[in-house]
Image (cartoon, rainbow, N blue to C red):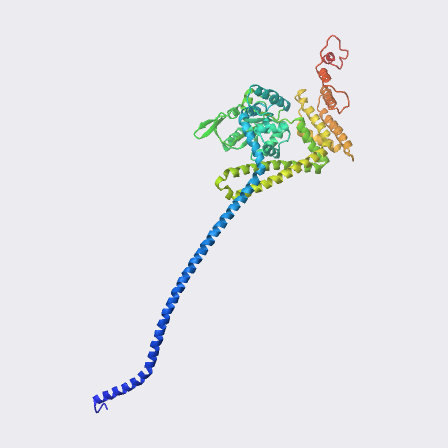
Length: 552
């Protein structure tokens, strides 16, 4: 048709398309109407959904608000509970603190009262203690007691200087813990040794110890340790060693000095120190030596009765470490029991060591307790759980130690009762030794060391016959020791001095009632200091001197 008429072709095409459009429109129109209806319904539902969602939002906001209120309430509840628990913990800690310190309360109250009194009596106490350190050292135990008990204290009281009643200078200079430490370092436990140690520790001048038995030297070595340097003035280059010790701050002991001390040491002993810059110098020989602050000096002599110049006494603190008869008796008792009853003596030594450790530990715990309390902040002390727990541990340990200490004291008392069986043997040995050291008055050649004496003492024990019962064994030991020591000493005596030794021995046996004879101090004094009569001639001149006859 397009070839015949172009217009007719386009018209026919239009008619065909219109017919096709009509068919399609008839199908699409219902679908479009359905879609519009569905869209309208959907829009209506969306509007309803929006209303519901708004309600949901409002409800969620209310729920969130209620949840927040619940959380705030729970947080407030937790804060209150935590605060209540904190307060309860503080209350518990306060109760624990009060209970932990309740035992200390009475002691601290007594200490407060004591300290208030000591504020007044401190002057007299310090005066006696200072005099004790400065002047008491060279004298024997008996003279020391008479000096401070019967002379110094009455004089202080007479001058109305405040002083503690019944004061003991040793207790002022050293407490029980200090004394226990000294004992663990090797110091004998007798009163004189403790006094000597207190003087050594407290004196400002360098100590010069009179120590023929070497007990003081043993204690100082135990106290200062292996780093202490020991020299003698008879050694080569001893001055160089002194200079090195002074400059390096070492502990120096000059042992076995005589009655004359080398003048080179005078500036050191006199503390003639010269300050140069920040350091102190001392002249030793021809050189100035810097003196270190940690330098310590001990001087020791083995002479029994040395006579030092007044200058030496002013330069040094002279301390008499000569063993006392009572102290030696205790040491010999330990030796005898160690041989006869080794298990018993070992138990005794362990108990003594434990008691010393208990005293040291108790003092340390008390010091730590006071230190912790003083370091604690008062405002936060109840929050310091570690402090209170440490206080509880300290209290528990202290109570346990006190209980163990009581048991140890009871056990030691029982052991001492068993050991006392051999006291007579030890007393015999101590008596004999002090007879020996007095022979130097007869002749200075007669010198006997404690070490040599103990050697023969043990030999006598080894030679003694054994018995099943203790009493005959003790008697046999005493006689064998007496005979062994007498034979040992007699071999070294001149004939004219043997009679003196026998008389001394006999008189001491009479005095101790070992020989069952009447003994009177007045008669003995009369015998030794009888008036002299020269009008009767001596008929026994062959063997008895005139002076002895005239006194008879």
